[in-house]
Image (spheres, rainbow, N blue to C red):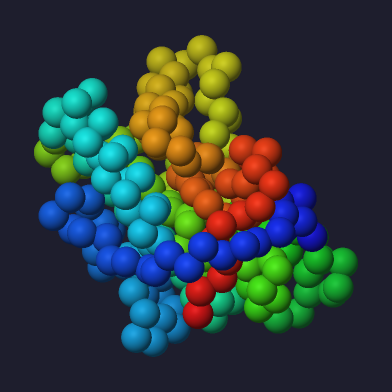
Length: 229
């Protein structure tokens, strides 16, 4: 169990609402849907009502700071079945990257790879006391787009399982390009933190509001968003 999963949940009952694409950019086609993730009749571009309000406030602040820039949503709501699909997919990808056949690993190898995967992916748990963050509607994976629609260079792609994904990976670099990566990450963080989001300790792109991770990072005693199916 991760530390944030010990936080109790008292769901406030806010609905999931669609992300308005005229105000916030989204990645389309959605990368997990392209892989065949089982969303059924659900959309990844839904969040809790309070999360959407905060995102729109962040977008307004970004427009004041950097006219023409936009927040881009890579992923938001994620049913448990999709979480399981993506954990399995990421495990297989990591095994291939290490030159291993994921189907013939011994238990020690399997657990070692899973430990790496679970640094970045929450376990697809159906226990209502420990929902994956994205399954609550309180978590978003985001980046920034410049005025011509190109993503700001953050130094690593979203979902990369490596130390480059850690928010401060480039913080102490002397390389000018890597300092730019860090500056872009910090600007994204400042915009979202300013409206109440907290950033995942291991992922520059993951921000949460109202879920267990948010409560843990903010030292709040109770989370207000539980799992939504």
